[in-house]
Length: 280
Image (cartoon, rainbow, N blue to C red; front, side, top):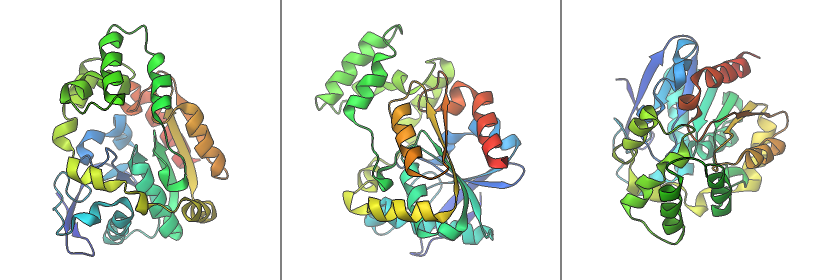
């Protein structure tokens, strides 16, 4: 397992999976160990996935200062990894809450990013977010599922303020296009792979200056793909489209039947879409 040292002295780990040109992969969660990305549906057959364990997650060290969990403070970790790898420019792929980290990295180091693949991303960094109403809208699409009633009741309790583990467990089917054995196994690792205390600090409102970040990303020249899931509420496809409209030339793909983890729902569609973008 290779490691490198962050500017504050924290030892950070990354994992190399596959072969081909490197693809720097930033996990979401927020603050979930990169293991949940797996081989991204077989994308590792086409690219070497450089899977970063964010500080305090997976095999990476715990920083002395918890304030460094804030997403904007982790931009320096991404740049340190790029320099460690000896790459002048990088292709970046990120998922979910990692979208904010990737966008902030692009804004801070525009000359270093060749392509940016945002998979079911959050984009508070450029002023776009999803809401409880968005989740309700997406949840309604699953009304015919056998698990819907129990899961929706749990969602209502969460929206009402519940933090019970049982309720969060019950809503997990909404995040997957198919609630099959693979999805269940993937979801079962969520809590053990996530640094919950760090996640609470990751998205501090002070981390974001959306107007400045958006202007910098627009000027970066990086090619952008936003890949949304048809059944996902975070973001809804129309919210993903709004993100794409903010970024000149950004491509939008909506994966049919997919939830928040599209590489699990249809690996062939996912890998074909990402690889086509990277090589176009």
